[in-house]
Structure formats: C-alpha cells, structure tokens
Length: 384
View 1 (cartoon, rainbow, N blue to C red):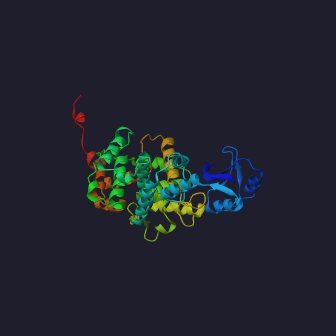
View 2: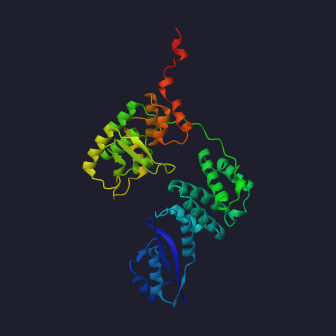
View 3: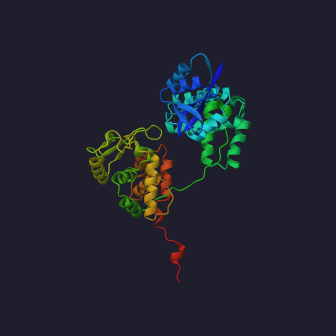
C-alpha cells in the first residue's frame, strides 16, 4: 500500500501540516487538488495550514487505498494542546522543542491537568503563562521520567541547579517554586510535604525614579499624540503597562474626573483621579484616531501591545539623554514617589496603586527626598 506521512512544520511563523510521500503521479494529482495546498521548496513538501478541517480534507482526498502515517502530527498536537494557554501561534523554538524533545505520555497528562487546574482557579493569563513555562521546563528535563516519581530532594536539587548552573535570578527561582508547589499541592494534593520548599532570599532593590524635570522632558519630546497620551497616562495615574493597554473608552469618567482600572493585578478594580492635563490630551487624541472600544488601539483595532509601549518610553529616554535604567513601571514608581514628596498620605498612595500590603508602598519612603533631602552631609559642615 502507498504511504503518505503527515508531519508538522513551521512555515513563515505559521504551523502547517507537511505532506510527504515518494513521487507518485496519482498521489500528486490528488494532493494538488486540495484547497489551499502549497509547495515548500525549503521543506520539499506540499503543505496546508495545521487545522482540523484541512487534516480531514487530506484524509478524504487520498482515500482508503493510501496509508496515512500521522504519529508525528498526533504527538505534536497532543503536546501543543497541553501547553496552549491562548490562541496565539507558537514560536519556532517551542515548536522544535515539542518535535525533537517530546514529553512522555504521563507528563503530557500532568501538563494537561496542571493547565486545567490553573484555569479552574481562574488565575490571570500572565500567572498561567509564567507557571506553565516553569512547569514545562521541569518536565522537559525529566525526559521519560514521570513527574509524579519525584520527591522533595529531587525538587530541591532542581532549584539549586537553576541557581548555580543556569544562573537564574532569585525572582525566577521563586516563580519556579510557586509553579512546582502548585502542581504537587493543588493538582496532586500532596499537601504539607511540599509546603516548606526553601526559597532564595530576594534582593532588596530600590525602584528607579525619574525627577519631575525628566518626566517633562520625556513627555515634551514625544511628538506622536497617541504615544504621548500613553506615557502621560502611565505617569498621571500610576498605571502598570498592562493597565495602560487595557484601558477602555468606558473607563474614562470625565464627569467625575476618575479612571476606572478594571481587572488589574490580582484581578482587582480600583479608581484613580483623572488628571485635567491628561483629559485634554486624550480628547485631542480621540479626535484624531477615533478609537471605538480600546482607548489605545493597535493597527487592527485590538489593544496596543505592551512591548510597543515599552519601546516608546525607551526611545524617548534615549533621545533626551536620560541614562536611568527602567521600564514603563518607572513611571508608576515616579508617580508614587512624587505623591509622597508632595505630602500625600501613604495609605492613600497604597489605595491608588492597588497594593494589598502597606509594606509594598513603604519602599517609596526609601527613595523620597521629602525627609532624606533635609539631611545635610557631614562633608558640607566642614570648614575648608
């Protein structure tokens, strides 16, 4: 019987089904009749998009007189389904890892159960992605060994390997601990056995702060009104980058002069004052761009990408000669610090930032010049 092999491959960033067979006039004629079929000179095969309807069409067109080998395709689809958090296409690196270093059957089931529990508990998309990535990395290292066979000693050895061999940061290892604990405690119900996994001590780092003059220089330098409005929103309301791009038109309440932040970190809503100057720029921006749902729309009407907002700020900082390192979150840090320096009560700042604990907000006291600026250096008291 004639044999046709279906294998997955990535073509121009899109996952496709490659159709491989020894040259045969009859099979070639059938394959070329498939709707949407194309030839890849690189992969040396015919291909269609990796979709269920295309797979069913291939099977129907080739008929029962051709044996269709689908092991590679089936294994890939099983693992992609277990790993998928959203509908976005997978990267080539992830694709190659799935194909050339597949998980064993037991660990595919573990990955599926892990994802389902995260979804059932309604964790945020960002948390699900972080936990899935950390758990997936551990599963890849195990090869054919079942994750459920690991004990606490093996998990501790893995965490030590992350620190010493991989050079991972303390924050990354903390995420790995949380991700692993979630599986054994929440999915497998192994309880207190994994509650006391050791964690590396987190470094105490002060937030990067912009001076008020630097904020003025950055905003004044940005000519594109949409870009300027996004940066101004970040500083004027102390928004995270995800909150900036997540704003809807309906979140801007110009009657009450408030901004409604919905579904922020920890799935919490909060209200923050709407700056008069921000409202002016937002109205000018709306007249030019006419956004419909999202306040800051991307090219096709979807929410603006977080990476693009980061690039806007970095470019502006570079062009005005500001060397301080920091992302868009620097605007949020600056907002909190400048409020504190203006005498705003720290409890109010906590509410505006949406912090659960006052301890998180207290770190801005370490960078505020309100008290520290009053202290005179002993050097300045010396008589030369």
